[in-house]
Image (cartoon, rainbow, N blue to C red; front, side, top):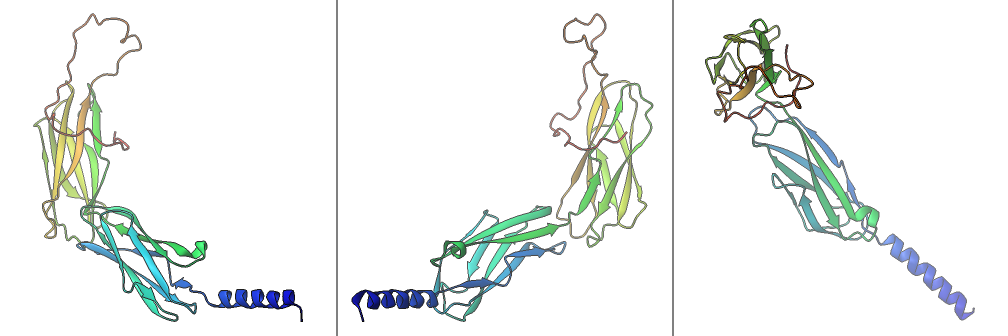
Length: 259
């Protein structure tokens, strides 16, 4: 038997040995959807794994995508056939809506396709109140009829009533039950529309779970739109100054104004 043939057999045997001696971390799932309860402070996801290979595998790093999320693994080394999990904890704070956080896991698996895994935690957090629209407005000279804001309460918040106050006496607000369960209809009305004014309506729910959170809606009487020649020709009439009683109030967020 030639030396070259023996070497070939040795290379093939070594390759087979290397191929058979491998680690492989298999994940039960790499994405978890959560719906935290109304008063939960955290959302916790469990990502379970198993080493389905025949050699140990080691975690090199477990890194969360932001400071509001932490992640930890039960073991630094996972032996053949061993199971475990990585726990990701998202601190909710005042966040609402859909929150997506990731955890990047790196192992010493020699296969680059398996050495890095991204785990995804998605939490749907229902707010205490959903308010629409965020702005109601009238044009100067428009009839000062009431316009309406809908506030839908979280069904678990046990909200019985809303207190609504205006930052100026130029607007009044009245709260009535809405057309659906856990819904309120807020009627907003300007005192008049003879001048441009701006106010913030502060909405405070009476939920026992509410820790002092308040919500805001902007109300405006808008000045007349400038004419096409206003930028080049000086005005010969009386100049109207916009009256803003609440300069500290933030500008209203973009949304679909109610008319």
